Image (cartoon, rainbow, N blue to C red; front, top):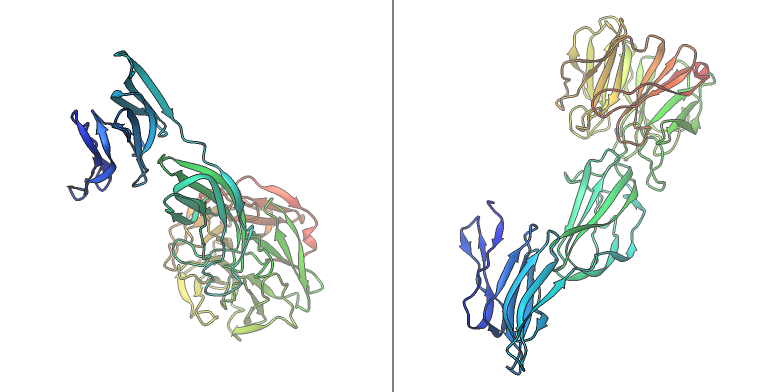
Length: 502
């Protein structure tokens, strides 16, 4: 196999001397410098076996210090390192053979003659590796990135094993099973595993808030076989906010679940928080709002690692920064005016996520009179760029909804319901445009007067949908991670009293 360092061992001719080995590198076509496994008086022949995982066992007879008796010795190459020679048997050995199984345990067989007779016995010894396991551990259950740009040691777990390890791997995955980061180490022959995670993903981006699953694997020193030792979860806060997650913060553990915003007839806005079990629970309430506002739960526009809220008041658009875990209050929540005019023209304002792959939230708007659809990109200055026209006329759609990431590619997507109640998806391409539509349902949502892409409320890492029908019933349709949704599930009633659901 190109690039793999393949150990090659040859049986020596009868005689005595040191035991040496060399390794052939397929990539370079050269042999390594010889390595001495034993400088003692090795006798007769040596034998070797290569196991399926690439480790090598070498066996040889060697005269004891008094030069009267032979003993059988063994050394193992695993993870690129040889173990020290170890004695496995004795008795004037005249021939040695060794075999190994798929997990690296070895059986040695040799002929041994007595010092007082010429009879030869067949002797055997089996070397099995003790089951590698963790004896002590300290694993923080929470990681606070604290809104800073540098966290060189955000998560510092440690494990102690009952046997030395040659190498270890800690894999961090999100709730959808995607690998966020892989940490590795090669301690050589230590029994302590101590990785350090800086809160960054494999692409050096800040990790999302929410729950991660970790898995610890290690290769036992001398065996060459990787074992899964432990798994667990950690909660990340103070990182990048998940899509539509408005709970938690740098000092509270964010849950990573999407949330729904409700406006009541008294002008109060309340977050209905996703539980991770597929339903919603009541959250913070902020008051003082006009019941005619159009609210758009948005991403982190100003870089404080908390999702923001766009609010259209009359013809103006404001970007409110309530901070993590706080409900927006009309009187006290800080805001920036995106534009003081020009926003009444839109009957649809929705946030699909990041559709340009620049790490910033984006806005989709539809002109009510022409049906033209525009993209407003989030900028590094905490506002929106000038609009870019995407489509000339989408009047045929009753609803256009920012759905979040439907297929796990990290790009925001759209769904659209036409006047015949067909449902389509538009995958974001990552350059600010969308791929051609794909029909995902027929006869869909004819009784719905509100549809919102709320992010993940089921805890499986995929974006879900919330809809309200004309009777005030609230339904969830769980995303399947493949661009479609499952059968609807009723999760509430009485929501026709809400002035708005966003």
